[in-house]
Image (cartoon, rainbow, N blue to C red; front, top):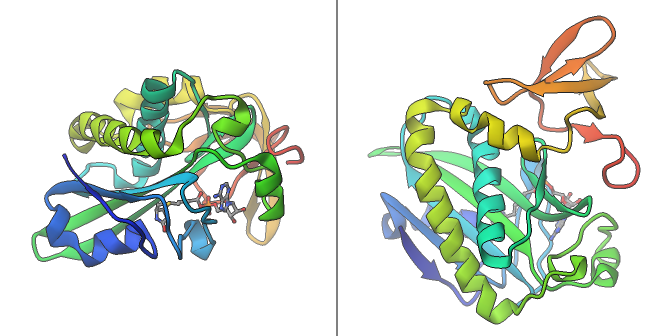
Length: 247
Ligand code: BT5
């Protein structure tokens, strides 16, 4: 898969959408300085120049279960971090990467219609060398970086290697994912998911609902035991007891 480097950009997701032709049918772009990074649901993704990897892959594909692309992308990111640094992150459903219970990476999946078909945009931000104090100062007490969690990192040298590893994992997983969906990846995902067995909270009809997460089903949803039976949850926002210190 193609890999381009940018000295700086507003957002690699935005760049990938605006420069589709440079990446299609499959390619990725990365930078270490993103001036307008975005999270899910219109939130911000904080930029710390030269201390993090901001990466986006553009994938022209027709997946059978596109709504589970965030879960697949988080697995690919765990694999890439493991292959570069030898540490295994865990996943907070659907797609935050945690190390020692702190968020070290976030993922934003989007899609756009192109004349050649639907194109998927997988944005991954991985914190490399920020200190915990820096994260606190950014208003992110539960955010961290690989280095702050004890992983030896040389940001300048490791960012390109990590981007190449992300390319490799995503390309490797996406062929099967497009054809078979989340099912084949479910056991690996469940083994990494911190929600399982914990109390989870989400918004339902204007009120807060909660229950114990019993499973992740083949649709990539949380299966939650609420006391009034099991329910499948697939909302953007779920918090977990014992993660991020509070919920
Ligand atoms: C995410 O959103 O976690 C998705 C982040 C995706 C960022 C990548 S970077 C490359 C590509 N280009 C982009 O413009 N975006 C993608 P969400 O689950 O909504 O989490 C956002 C929340 O995480 C914020 O509201 C903060 O609480 C927290 N946060 C913001 N910046 C952070 C950072 N650098 N590290 C850890 N947590 C952060």
